[in-house]
Length: 437
Image (cartoon, rainbow, N blue to C red; front, top):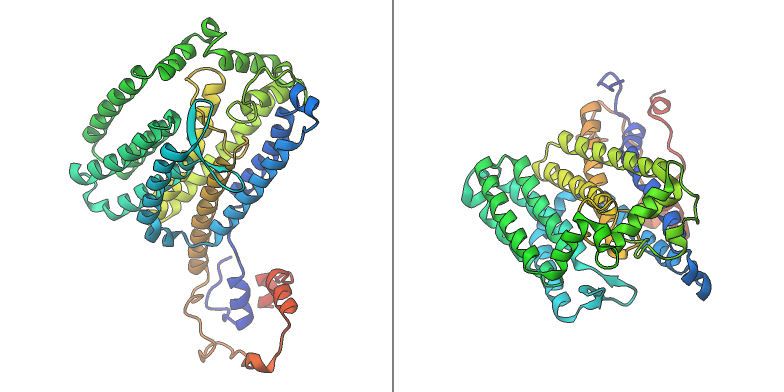
């Protein structure tokens, strides 16, 4: 029931309303479920003959839990950091991303015929993951600022295409074709949502398709992956090995799966990178179709809540940012699933919140934290509409009861422990109905 002026906004009511934090609990719950499932699947995917022989079966699980802890800390921090302040950080973040991507090309860590990581004291960081999030920030800021001129070619197409081209060029030097595909998809979809002319987008599709064809045809590794995805069994001993092993794992799982910790492809180690790029294959082998459908439903929930937040946000920057984050996470999940069933070539993209990978976990949790902050801001706007005068209320107003004056801090000595206890262990706040009584 909406609170009207029939009930005076007393100091107690004002204080309790300010404590209300309208989080999007379904979205947060979906992410927590995926994080928990991911920890179980990473442990189950790394139990094989090699880890059993070395006696370090929990090595990757410990590292993964550290990644989850860092990612969840970033999620909490982003939830309480006002998203509108990110607009001032767009161009500095873009510059830092350019520098980090260039450093990867020069002094990056090489693994698996690719140079994509920067060696940090605790773990290797992949700047390409940061590039996706920063590019969404840039597009959201630019589209919100140029909303009135978005149908002009020089405004809608040229600046965004130039930034996207630089990022893609730096990613291809690594090489990282999967991130390049994600960046192109982000740009095309967000320009479409912003209302850019379809003729501009058609030109973009033509130019992008031609450049993608050249990038594939000029590189033997990419061309081999494309040919292997068309008929992986014909290249079973070569580039189609991972796809064939993935299909065997998915097929052997059936409807209910073989059980956690079991599965021929997982236990024997025949499925490379099972905890990373092919975590869905491991999940299908051990939990079956039911497990895959559960993950798909959870991501469907994330898609629904993200689009709902975007549609209900009045701020243009927040609307584009919410849509871009939702599209990024869900498109990575869909691409990862398509790779697992060999419908598209392998891209080297992890499954958000489930796969093993520190950089992906950090950026995915950070993005969800920003999305939760947008939802929280939207909840406060609804609270202001429900409780008139919540922002303009003043204890000195004659219509409201006067709050008792507070004594100076020096007259009320409080220990540091008491301050910490008061700050982090507050008693449960009474409901609004209790306060109104």
